[in-house]
Length: 330
Image (tube, rainbow, N blue to C red):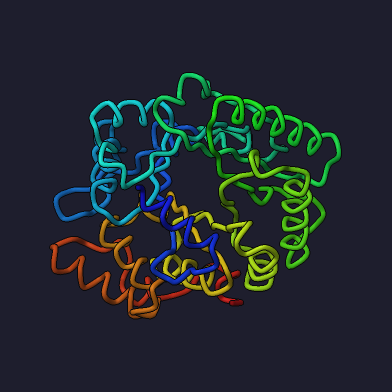
């Protein structure tokens, strides 16, 4: 049985403990950013170079993390999931491979583009019949824009997707982004709006078509606690990582989110752009299991880098700072 299945079962029975927290490595950036998705190449000392990694290097990083025992889910594009599944990377069944099932326009981040300045439009690259032999679990993302026409189109597309998922015997988890542009709602009110939109969307769904869990932006303690407490065994809330930020931001985010009810963390850039992704995720586990504080975790992480002869991207004093306003407020 996969660690994901075990942990979801435990959470749903109301027996959650910090060791049951689910961590996913979101390596699906190629469906958003293209060439630069694998991240910059580093030299022998771990210093960033101007050259991006290649696909083979990206696949090697995915395989290394998948075999580390540190993550429960590996989220990928369909093409990369197929390659690694054919290599037998997920053959032992412990780590659950997941495929991004849709790539709405607001994740399109080609260099020089401005797609994120516009409302999200539904779009699916992945053919569910083609990918179901690779993985049963997929990610579907939506963004609410506070616009009747746009949001209706978004919800109708999600409805059509759910029909396909049920028909093909697949499972999915739902990603809900904050809009990247001004929708006339800000601050704490934005968290309220997103929470209400999520519950409104799910209220009309029977169990067979509901997502396994959510992936959403952390909108602060109040919004997280409100949503997570609404139906703690039926609606499992997870957080996305967002921008890389400092290492302290990474550890504070997972710590605060878990404290206020999140049970899943799905981090992309925070893991992929780290100097030592394996060491970072190992420290995330310790933070969420409350064996070390976020601040001490940063110091321990830097000590690991030093021992390995790696150069840190930031001076330790800077890396110990919380830079995300939401996390500062928490």
